Length: 398
Image 1 (cartoon, rainbow, N blue to C red):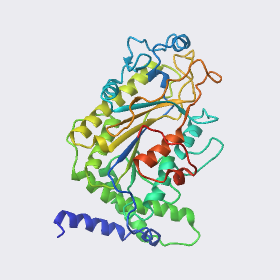
Image 2 (cartoon, rainbow, N blue to C red):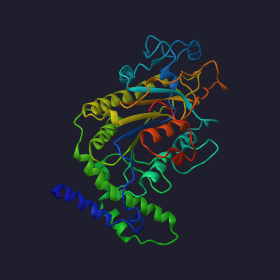
Image 3 (cartoon, helix red, strand yellow):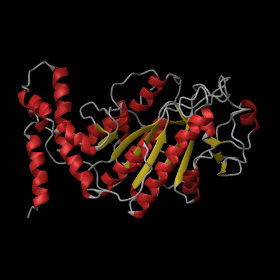
Image 4 (tube, one colour):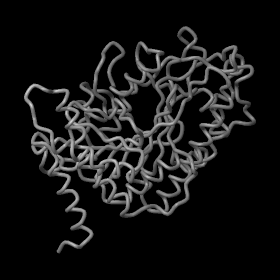
């Protein structure tokens, strides 16, 4: 028996589906997402975070020699081991480390690194080599593989006003939204409904069809996302920052029955050419407080083992400080993995070798595409080689 609330939900979806063009009807069918309830949350540290002042080589003389005013004193760093400490603002991450709920992967990068923000971010988003230019992303291609037959194309959501390249597929795109209620309100504005009603498929008008397809997908999903966000809203207290608000929204959606497997959000800018200490401390404090609330909330609701949060930045910074109290664009960096389902925790590989640099920059030891392959295969249960267009070695932290 269909209850009244479910009837209203189905009714609103049915209404929306009437506006969907014929080409979207072809997507109707059985979902092919594998069994399980695992969720991946990707946090992008935009602007090139300084990894050496994030995971600090506290007993490395080269570090302090190259950063006489910027190096973080070993007495202030949060000790992880005999040779490494965390940035003093990352108190919650230290707690996660002590509880065996944080994994840190050092020296992650790719061959022939590009120090341009835009190009390097494109490489991380698309999972291409530095010589290739792809117009779709690795999460987007995951959607292509997993959601080509979905009636609700909401397997990946970005908490933002714009959709990142990482979430654009060859056939299916994720949906970007800052707030489910605002998306719902916009989708139900008369203007957009009238535009969709008047649209007629015209052969050969591919750019126009693409725009209508994107609009139709968003309109048909807005009701579903909004209704799901109201089903089990978290009662936990989050910091009143953008990251705190976004993670609260994600937690509420995780507790609902929504089919979303990947959430994507950003924090930044970490482009610290000048005044790095203040900027990094401010951003790390926001990240620390929001992640503390998020992980506490997940644990209280019994979902911490099902959720893995992964951080990345498009590049690290150079080893030496510059004359402006900051650092310039570099190469390899570290990544954080937070969750209750990790198999290998703590510092899962060696710190960067500061005595073996390439033109003053760190040498990468782990190709980031191996991280993607591991996450796709071992966490999301997907065919990583097909999605990444090549096989990469799997890592052992999942």
